[in-house]
Length: 350
Image 1 (tube, helix red, strand yellow):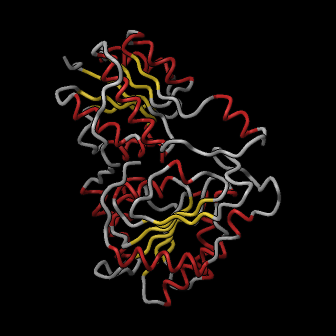
Image 2 (spheres, rainbow, N blue to C red):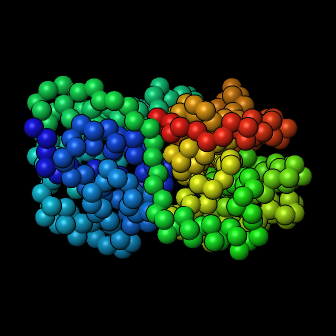
């Protein structure tokens, strides 16, 4: 017997919310009559609002006390909870359901994370993050039936853009002088951490090469990354810089119009893969084995000291930054050309 309501908890960040989409699809297939409630921060709402598998959003507004969200969740009376975050917030929320009806995902063994932070070892992922989310969904379905984990069909990532956001993105591109009938390459040269960022001058070289080859280039990033995109735009004349000008919905619409998308290990990279846009990704201090790049391309130097971080660092611990500096622009351009020849992709599994 399926539950009437199941609450899924994931408060961030951007990429992680996108990565939960495959497990939501698996849950919806297993329990087609269940109402899936997705609890997250309001800033991530556009990533989930149009997901056909989510029937209700429970949003935590900036500055809102968690007790308020807990009362709202309690009023919905979920039969079971899938905690895909396992942080302080989610622990306080998941106790609204019986302990027997709560499943918690586990990203990695705790002591492994400690060893990486202490520089005692590098981090090598043993499973895609989205596969771990899927595994948690299998555990929830099985435990609700008082059985062991139930094998569920694997589903691809998904990101659904509203017609309004898609049209808004297209109008913005046209106002910037882009021809929607011609190929557009999107480039997101920023990242939250410096060690996750391919050198800005190389992003500029790649953008200039693409423009010289007759392609249209759009730069994007958060307001905090405007300095990075401005440097690329200055060096690559003709690149259109839209950093900080779009919300997440419009950003998804813009990426959706790209013939290919270039990014570091960041949220927009996950959005592009979920949309099936051919994606070229750069990895340095973090492990690309955490994600599925079937049909896409990743650039990874695989130096002996990498991946040295779980999330990213402010600077290279060994001060040589070879994990990124060893990735040459010519190799990136060749990879991008291959993606442009291949057309849209099927959604990856994670």
